[in-house]
Amino acid sequence: MLKLVQHDKHKQRRYMSSFWKVFITAFVSTVIVGGITFYFMNQKLIADNKDKDAKIADLTKQVTDLKDIDTTSWKTYTNSKYGYSFKYPNDFIVEQDDDSVSISDTNWFCSVVVQANTNNKTLEQLAQGEATTTSKTTDIKLGALAAKKITFENVSEMGKGKMVLALDDNNEINVTGRSLTILDEARFDRILSTFQFTK
Image (cartoon, rainbow, N blue to C red; front, side, top):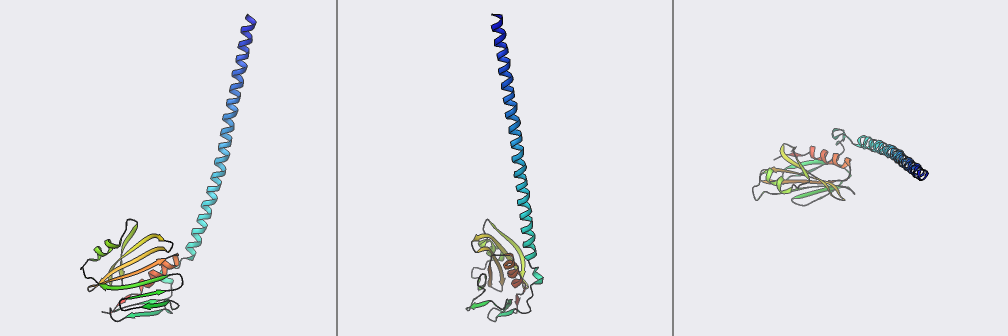
């Protein structure tokens, strides 16, 4: 009987010893596998971040400073009815009617529309009527006029949309453009910077 009890205790110790060996082995294996996985995922994240940083640096090199866009070879559009003019790249196509003009190349366009402010809205009211929950509105100058610039993020596959609103006498001036690239944005802003009002 004593031998049987001792045998059972010995068997129980071996079982417990085996259990702890398996448990410790499983635990250590999990820690090692987890550590290796974390290391490689972290390395991938570091590589991805370096790749993104390189792309950002490349895009930054591509961005032309607004002042560096040379407008000396650009053409000038003049609207004598409403008394404004602006410059645009000489290879752009111009389409116009009495109250609007659009300029474009094959990928990008900008339009200027002038219409009577029949409801006597303020500039703020005009901007609020166009703004959305995802747009950003900033104060700028269009020539000598106070203006509101509204940027619409990711409006469609056409890219980022920009709209500039101004009031001249009792006319609303609406300048709109779509930007697919950073260069498009810089070109749009450069066109805006050439606006002049003669009336």
